[in-house]
Image (cartoon, rainbow, N blue to C red):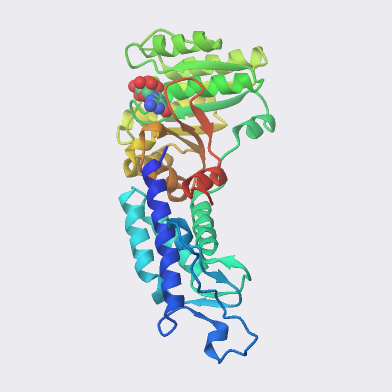
Length: 350
Ligand SMILES: Nc1nc2c(ncn2[C@@H]2O[C@H](COP(=O)(O)OP(=O)(O)OP(=O)(O)O)[C@@H](O)[C@H]2O)c(=O)[nH]1
Ligand SMILES: [Mg+2]
């Protein structure tokens, strides 16, 4: 997952580290250590240790310098490396607002005085990247906690464009919630596409979850209304409502979604799109949120996405949390989105 982005971020980490070190090694230029501005007393150590290890590995190469006193990094020291990072993020399909936010945050962390005694330049850089990435990734969304703390049945409506993985996601989340001890009912709200009712029916049977369905061509609001009623009368914890794929600019289909919302009164509207769609997924999520609203996002097919741009940008761009990532075609191939874990994964051995 996101292998290409991981590689690129590690290269950026190395590049930023070596830029700062190069500036330290040439104090006439940019980064300086406080003590180097005055002659050193005999017993004073230099502000940074400049001696490279015996045989530096690629990683050691940019971990050499340990901040022992005060390090001052100037804008100029990191300007080129930050421009490269910016390009890398944009090439990885990270949306422009998210890219801008990351670059501004890294710059803010790095430029200026650093007084962390014993910190390596690399950990300074990793710290800056971590803070910046966590800031755009937001907090995620803990569905289990949400369900525990809300009146039952919790009603969740899944929306999105065609073929992105809504139905599969409904089944995966149903299976996940069942394993966590919640009772679940699925509403077959895609009455439009031929075969859609059978498709969700097969999933429901495989995972052992009750499904409510009406004949093809019926009103999806009616099916989902019945599903909520079933959940209420059977004391079911969660209603998962599948819907037909649609584009935000199809007014009739969007007003159908409005009607579904009025009738089933969802607690959560979840927008589903595919990570592989990159910036398109972010734009579509934005449009859906504007038109019918979205409380959280699921990105599917992350297993097929090496760029990672949508996952990095979507929460920041639309201001709604990323809840799950789909990582394959089996029921267990879904993971709650936990920003801290994703950042650790992206930055490697950080
Ligand atoms: N590799 C991979 N494939 C996925 C994932 N999620 C869904 N798929 C596949 O994507 C295809 C479409 O999935 P559906 O769940 O039918 O998508 P949908 O959004 O319900 O499609 P419509 O109802 O036609 O709008 C299927 O072949 C799924 O197996 C995922 O996380 N990874
Ligand atoms: Mg579907």
